[in-house]
Length: 188
Ligand code: FES
Image (cartoon, rainbow, N blue to C red; front, side, top):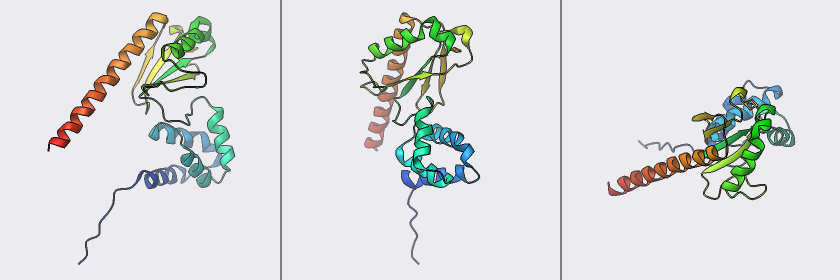
């Protein structure tokens, strides 16, 4: 009797399956929620995801692309290890977050139009009001999937430097523990 070998799903088939599942009962009006679900799982919306969402919902690619580029919340590029979201709501804007945003760009050495730091540790995004305006100006740091989320209030120039140092340290520790794991696998 011949054994059947079941291969693990590739990223492509997994993506197709995931989008098929979440669009099974979805309609055109659910487009934003569908895109949110894809981004929550994969961290960003690659072109193939947009194409699959369009096909499964029966809408045009340009409509899906238009929605994905219109809203701040969607990313079309892979995010850094940590995503810094700077609130641009009225309260935070008035209390200095426009300056904080520019200062972060300088500290992360991002050129105009760039949103990812060179070392790929940080992504920088402008965000809408987080609903905690009494802490203005507010910055939220998440990991690339959004599973980790920390809110920082009353952030000033000194605070920005502290936040960057905190996450650079975390990123370094994570990198070191991954290297250790790889070495342990190699030694087996
Ligand atoms: S305006 Fe920034 S949290 Fe509301």
